[in-house]
Each structure stands twice: as structure tokens, then as C-alpha cells.
Image (cartoon, rainbow, N blue to C red; front, side, top):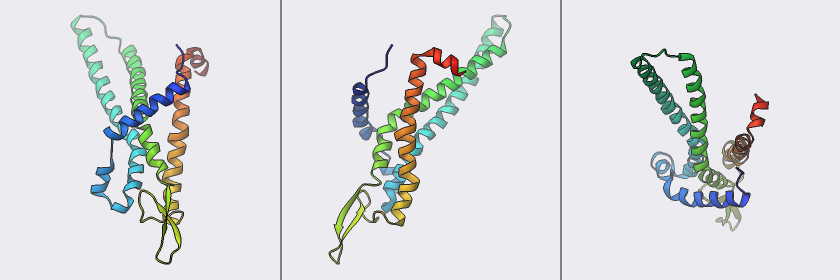
Length: 193
């Protein structure tokens, strides 16, 4: 098996981003509960945190599933009169549990990836307006009451935009690439252990 080409990846990601905007939108949540002028900043924060929230929910789901499955195996083994090897069940359950958590997080992050980057890249997007004294000033496109490149806007850039771009624009794709490389070449995985 080989990895998809970059063109196939971009085409697929483009298709996902088209669907994603229609299905997953958190704008209305933030418009109803927070100040209107900062809705986009909350949207970016929510988009950045959402995969971690889904990952945490998946953690609890798979934890419950693993516990119930272990009980089921225990009952089945006792019913058949066999000796139960708890160590092998724990070892296999722990390995499967970690694998399921990683896969759940990766799927959630991958599906939300276009929305995360789109909302993050809206933060440095400024437009120019003429003020009352006929002077041109830049304001945030998604929130025109926030002046660009001033203290308030720069705090959004430093604390939301830059970490989002580093985490989701650089670290996440690189980690996915690394995981794919390990799955295609399992001998490298053995060398790392």
C-alpha cells in the first residue's frame, strides 16, 4: 500500500472543507452566549479546542467500552469453564484502548481541520475604512469594531492565531504524516521501540 499523492490529499481535504462548513458551525452558539464583538475570537478558540473536547469524550466512551468488554470476556470465560487470563486481557485491552483514542482524536481533528484553519486565518484578515477625519484605518474583517494591529488585536494574534497555526497548521499535519509513515513501514516502528 502506498500513501496518496499530495494532489489527492488536497482534493479530498477541499471536498471535506466544503461539506464541513455546512454541517459543523459553532457561530450560533457563540453569538447567543458571548459579546457580539468578540464572537469570531470565541469561534477560533472553540474550533481549536473542539478536537480535544471530542477526544476527551472519546476517551470516556472507549474507557466505558473497554471496561464492559472486559467484564463480558470474564463472564463468557467463566460460563465456558475456562481459566481467565487477566494479564493478556489487560495488555490487549490497554493497547486497543490507546489505539482507539488516537484514532478517534485523529478523525475528529482531521474532519475539523478546515474549519479550524479557516477561523484562525480570519484573525489577521483586516480591511481599511475611512474614519471621520478622512483617515484610513484597518479593522478586523470579521469583527469591524476591533482595530487591527492594536493591543487588543495583537493579543488575539499572539494567543489564538499563532498557537493555532503552529498546532493545527504545522504540528498536526506533520504528526499525521509521521503516523502514516509508521503504518506503511512497520519495521521503522520496531526500531523506535
